[in-house]
Image 1 (cartoon, rainbow, N blue to C red):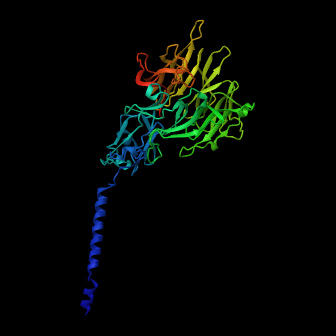
Image 2 (image 1 turned 90 degrees about the vertical axis):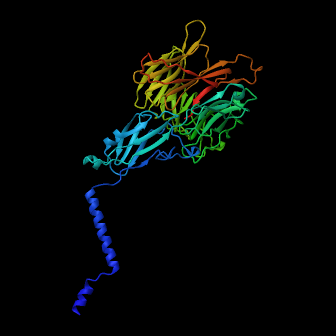
Image 3 (image 1 turned 30 degrees about the vertical axis):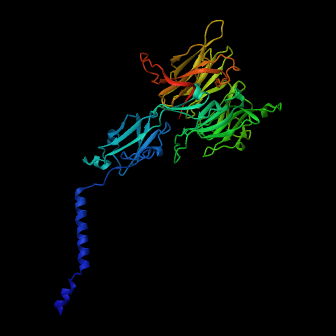
Amino acid sequence: MAKNMIKNKFFLLPIDRISLAVILALVVVIIIKILQGDIAVVEVSEFNWQHKYYQSQDVKIKEQEAVKLGADYKSFSLSFTRPMDTKSVEEKLTIDPPLAGKFSWAGSQMFYTLLTPAPYGTEYKIELKGAKDRFAAKNNEDRTIQPFSTVFKTRDRVILYIGAQEEDKGRLVLYNLTQDKKEILTPADLSVDDFEAFPDGDKLLFSAHSSKTQDLLSAKLYTVTTGIKATNSNQAQKSKKIELVLGNKNYQNLKFDLSPDGTKIVIQRASKVDTKDITSDFGLWFMSVDEQKSFSEDKLQKIKTQPGGDFIITPDSEAVAIAQGQGTAIVPLKADGSEPLDYFPNFGIVKAFSKDGSKAGMVKFNDDYTRDLFLVTTEGEQKQLLKTTGSIIKCEFDSASPTLYCLLSQLLPGEIYQEQPYLVAIDLKTAQQKPLVMFPPEQRNLEMSLSNDGLGLLFDQTTPDESDISENKNSVKTAQGDQVSTSSLWLMPILPILETEEVKVQPEKLPLIGFHPLWLP
């Protein structure tokens, strides 16, 4: 009986034998893993731009769902599953075509900040092979990251202009330089006077009057869709969709400006009713824009400030710089009569703001009828950039370099008053001027536009229509009210201002007939 008890004590049931076998197997696996060392997979877990245009590993998504990246995308990041040897990642990361930038790290996340905006109309491939994690590099092991490859694409190079030939005369035209595709956006019964683009490029804000009249003071404000997908939209709207923003029943709409973030519109208006009260007859109104970019005249509010002249919305979209008296006031976009945020008594007008709002190009009007262009910064610096006997027509800051591009004119000697326009690049650090284009003296109306990637400068050259307006009712007019017979558009590639003088870049005449060119953001 004692023998049977001893046998039963060491007897194992089937489930006990299975459990014991599993435990032994796990012990063996653990021992093998320990002997092999650290073999955790090292890979890129996230690329923050990959869903903007392409998915990772070169899997292309549907073109109509794609969002192409604009100049406001300034840095991308890679997240890793393990802490990385930063030096090996920075040495092994490749971008084709190359994009200059600088690295920074936050734990296992790498950031690459572009020094200049990525050129538009280009597809870029990012690859990372052979990089090591921190522990493999420290132990001099051969283990490297899983190869990573992805692509992204920047927005197409797209320009806008007002047509000047029969089929598009006075109409807004979109021309895609990347795809060599032209599209007329506005109907034939509207003659466009001025326009601006919303920051995503999906819509345009424009003023227009009936093409059956030459009365520029009868203009109304509209929007039109471009067919381009907005960054935060699920799908692109069809192009050519027109919406009335502001009518002209009681007021004339003289000028307007769209805020950089696309959320506000400022309109300079004059009452059609003579009340002998200039503060109510003439001034600035502003309107807020909702997320759907819809409008209502009920949203219009008057800015309670002294009447002024030229104006421009500040880069933060919260105030407007307006010429008042002999100076310039920075007035908040409020209807409560708030005091100006700042006043510059020595400068009569602001020609341009840098995108970050740290710099402004301001004009000083002198007693001898000359004009000075100053660089004014938020740090209090006021540096004279140039003096001219003519006009300072337009200026734009380059986001890719410390350069200010200006369209100017100089007074020619002689008894006949005549100005010669020219285009110049100004180095903001040294105030060095680099002339780009000299225009003929008879060129009265000129417009220019600098591309968001800083690589192209558009300008027009109009031929005035000297015929009697009563005999030519189909003639189109510039924003200054001059009749246009025809007009050519030119594209000048931009090189750094410090290039040697031997490098001469000539503008290229585009096969387009129109004026008032503008790059789409």
